[in-house]
Length: 440
Image 1 (tube, rainbow, N blue to C red):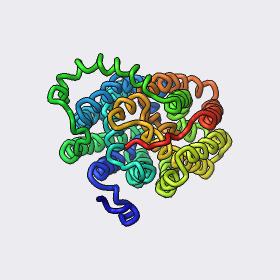
Image 2: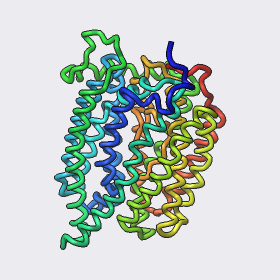
Image 3: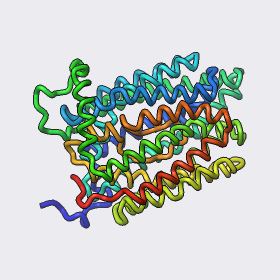
Image 4: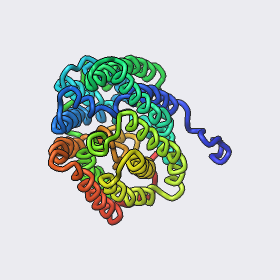
C-alpha cells in the first residue's frame, strides 16, 4: 500500500519522467528564450514588414497542423518516447535556417520546417499527463511550467543586452548588428537542442507498455500512418463529451484572435511606445517573474477550488488587461500590462491543463492532445504557442490577418482580441462543466 499523500513531501511527484521533461525544458528555455522575444524584430531587420510577420507565423502554424494527428496517433499506438526523442532531433536541425538566414524568406522556411517537426508535442503532452497522478495535476502542471519559466524570465534580458551591445560596439548598422547577435544566439540554441534530444532518448521511460511488435515506431513507417491517423480524427471528435467539445470550440474561436495579436506586442512596444530591446527584455523578465512566483500557489488553488473557477477568474481579468495595452505609455505601463497577462495565464494554464487531462483517459490522450492541445486558452505575447490540429487553421488565419489588421491601425489587435476573450468567458460560464470522475 502506498504512502499516504499527507506524509509525502510537497514535491514528491517531481521524479522520473517529470524530472527529465522539466530538465529538458530548462535547457531549451536557457537558449531559445534569449532570442525568441525578438523574433518579429529579426524579421523586420531582414527586410520583412508587418504583413510578412503575420505570413511567417501563419505558415508555421499551418505546417504544425500537417503532422499533428500523426504524432498523436503514433503516441497512442506505438508509444511516446522514441517519437519524442527522434523528432526533437529533426526540430533542432530546423533551427539552422534561423542561423544562416539572409532574407525573411529563409526565416519563413525555418518556421515552416520547425513547426512541421513539432508533431511530437501530443506525445510529450500525453507523457506528461501520464506521469502526473490525478490528485496533484494542478500543482504538477504549474511546477512543470514554473521551473523552466524561472530560466525563461532571465533569458530575454540577456538577449536584449546582447543585441544592444552589438549595435553599440560592432560598428554595424542597427539592423546588421541585430542580425549578427540573433544568429549567434540561434547557433547556441541549435547545439542545446542536440543535447536535449540525447537526454530525452536516453532517460525518458515509456508509459504505454502494451505496444504490439507490428506497431513499434519507425520513421520508415511514418507514411503508412498518415491515413489511419487522419481517419482517427473523426472518431476522436465523436468520442468527446459535450463539455470537452465546447472547450474545443472556444479554443478554436480564441486561437484566431490570440494568434492575430501575439507577434505584434514587441512591434507595438518598439514602434508606438518607444521601448528599446533591452527594455523589452526587462519587461519579459518582470512578467515572467510574476508568472513564476504565482504558478505554484495558483496551481494549488486549482487542486483545491477546482479548475473551472480558476478558468473563469483568469478569463474575467484577461479582456480588461488586453484592452488596456493600447492606452499605456512607457516602460512601466507595458510592464504592468504584461505582468497582468502573466497573472491571467498562471490561472488559466494549469486549470485548463487539469480539466482537459481529467476528461481524457490515458489510452486516448495522444490522439486528443494532437487535436486540441493541453493548455486550453493561453495569451501569447510573442509567437502563438500551443494548440492542436483543430486549432491550427483558425490560428494560422488569425496570424495572417493580424499583419493586415496591425497595418490598418496598431490599436485594433488589442481591441478585437479583448472582445473575443470576453465572449469566450461567457461561453465557458454557460456551458463548461467539470467531469464527475478524474481520469488517471
